[in-house]
Length: 191
Image (cartoon, rainbow, N blue to C red; front, side, top):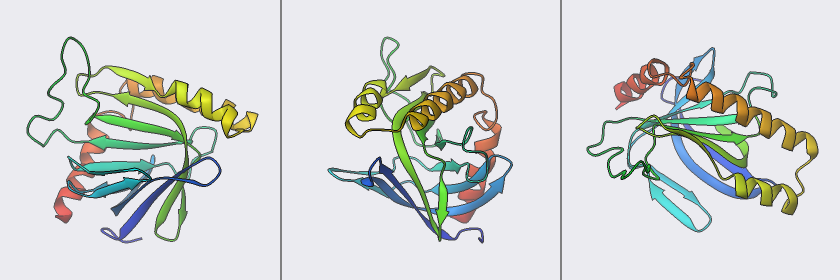
């Protein structure tokens, strides 16, 4: 795929339930996977919700790794917008934007120019303050029963969540600052 090729990110929930869909542009690949970029103002939609991306962001889809370690989809936001990350009070993080947002999911796959994955509810998040947390554990607990997640899927999601949480907390690549910054520069050069 060529630099700048338009692509679609199509996340679903278990049972082919629609979730977030938005457009991006292909940036390239490295040892971590395939990188795409989303410009500020891009429409992101899911049933019952729409938002415009407030900041440029680069996303990483680990499409070639083993599923045992590649069950996630990561988004890295820049600090380029005025006030990004502002508004936290008394140790609380703003809900958005955040520096790193990792959806625990099935391994992303290419379907033509669309990246598809099934979001498995759990999220690993690092705020601009550097605080790291796991979000939506309650949703995962509810959906694993309501949507009848297979036990192997549950085990894989929990293992990937733990591994990603550790890597994000340790600022290990690709969750360091330099790796996504390199791809943010590629995105900026396209504009």
